[in-house]
Every structure is written in C-alpha cells, then in structure tokens.
Amino acid sequence: IDALQRDGRLPNNELAAQVSLSPSPCLRRVRSLEESGVIKRYVALVDPLKVGLQMLAYVSVKLEKKGHMPAEEFNSAVNTWSEVVECYAMTGDMDYLLRVQVEDLDHFSRFIMGKLLKQAAVADVKSSFALERVKETTVLPLPH
Image (cartoon, rainbow, N blue to C red; front, side, top):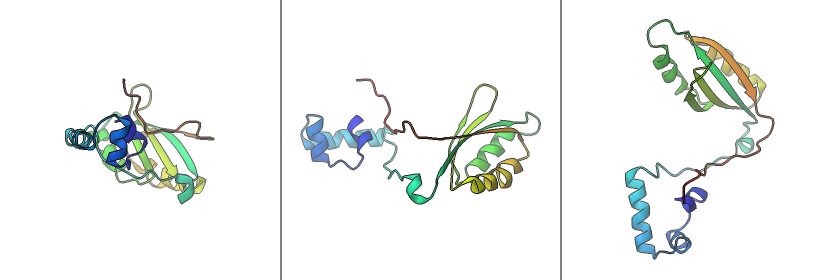
C-alpha cells in the first residue's frame, strides 16, 4: 500500500521487487486491496499552479440551525461547486471546512458572492488564504 500511495503507476514487477514478492502473488494482493475498497481509485495529481489555479483558500462555514435540514441542502450545493476540492463537516464553532482552489481573488469573490453566500442556510463565513505550501501529501501514515 505504501509503495502504491507514492506511485500508483508502479509496474507490478517493480512493486513485487520492492515488497519482496514474486509478481503473481503481488498482483493478487493488489487486486484484493482494490476489491475490498482499501484502494479506492487511481488518479493523476494535477499541479494547480500549472493549470492557472493560483489561490488556495480555506473557508469555514456556519449554518443557521433553523429550517428544514439545511445541512442536506448545503451538502448538495457543495457537491456542484467545482471550486470546492474538499469539504468536511466539523465539530466546534463552524459547521464545515472547505478547501477552495481558484484562479485569483476575483474568482474567489465570485465564488463567495455568487455561490456560497446565496445559500439560505449560511449564517457565517470565515476565509483564510494559503501563503505557501509547506507540506502536501496524499500518503497516509500507515502502521508498519
């Protein structure tokens, strides 16, 4: 799993050598991990800066507690917004934390004003902008 987290395109024979298995048992183990859902999918990780998405913001959102299931409506809306690359329901003062990737401040403003704040259940929004990527990984810290 660790080797595939670091390089999902690793050929089976190279993976087998890294984990001290012959290719056939290695392939069976990988297929088993895929079938059991441990390996969810394979993706290409795109550099946001190279595709013009220069600004990364973290947005905390608080919903009104009144009305009919505002969380369900908010969840549905979030899933239609391409700018939101991650969304988590949170404990604490705010209800959601969004990771928002946009081109620039104008794009961010259009997102906030045209999408997020148009949601009737949104009571409060707080934004923070990333100044520098200090660490970014998709590799989970697996017990060995």
